[in-house]
Image (cartoon, rainbow, N blue to C red):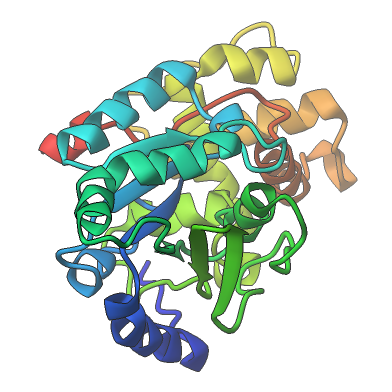
Amino acid sequence: MNIQWYPGHMTKTRRMIVDQIKNVDAVCEILDARIPISSRNPDVDDMTVGKPRLVVLNRVDQADPEMTKKWAAYFRGKGYAVLESDAKSGVGTAKFAATVRELLADKLKSYAEKGQVGRVVRVMILGIPNVGKSTFINKVAGRKTAKTEDRPGVTRSKQWVPIDRNLELLDTPGILWPKFDDQSVGMNLAYTGAVKDDILDVETLGCHLMSYLGENYPDAITTSYKLAELPLREQEENDIAYGYRLLQAAGRKRGFLISGGEVDTERMAKILLDEYRGGKLGRFTLETPEQMEK
C-alpha cells in the first residue's frame, strides 16, 4: 500500500506555515493520543525549527491511559511542553494559556526587562486533518471561532484567534504529507478517520484493525462482540487472515449474515470502524514509544 494524497491546498498551507513562522513565539502541535507518531507530520520539525514547542495529546478519552502517560514522558524527554486534552469535552483546554506562558517564561521575562510588559504572545497551531484542532481552539477561546466538522480538511485558510489580551493563536489548515512510506502509518490514519475512507478498502482496513485489537486488547473484542473467546492465531497466519476470522466471528454473533449463511464481513468492518472511532469499544493506543527506539 502506497497512499499518496497531497491536494493543492496542502501545498499552499506548507508555504503559509514557512512564511508565518517568523510572526509567532511558539508552535503548538495537536496530535491524536491514540496514534501520536502517525498523526505527526514529519515535515513540521523542519518548518518550525528554532521555535519552542508544545505538544497537545488530544482525544485522551479514547486512548489507553497508561500509554498516554508514556507518550507524555516521551515528548517531554524531547524538550517539548505537553498538554493532555479531550477537546470535545474541554478536559485539559483550560490549562493551555498557562502551559504556553510556562513554555515561554524566559522570553516573557526578557520582554518584561525591556519594558514590554503585556506584549501579545502568538502561537501557531498545527495538526493533521481531523485531529480535533478546530474543536480544541474553540474550547480554548471559549467561543466558536473555527469551523469544525467530523471529516478531514475543513479548515482551508489561516486565521488569528484572540484568546485573551495577551495571547493569540494562528489557526492553520490541516496538513498531511506527500506519501506514507510506512504502511502502518497509513492504516492508523485511516482507522481514526484522518484520511478519507474511500482511499482504502474498508474490509482490508477492518481486518488489520481487528487483528491488532485481538492481539493487544482481546478482552475488548470478546466483551464488545459477546464472544466466549477469541480464535487462536495460527503460527503462520498474517494480520489480514487472522483479522478476517475475527470479523467473521464478530459478524456472526451480530447476525450479519447473507445468502448461504455467510458472514457479511464488509458490513462488520464498517461497524467495527464506526464503533472504534466513536469510542464504543474502549480506550486503545495503536502505537508505543518503544516502537520509536527500533
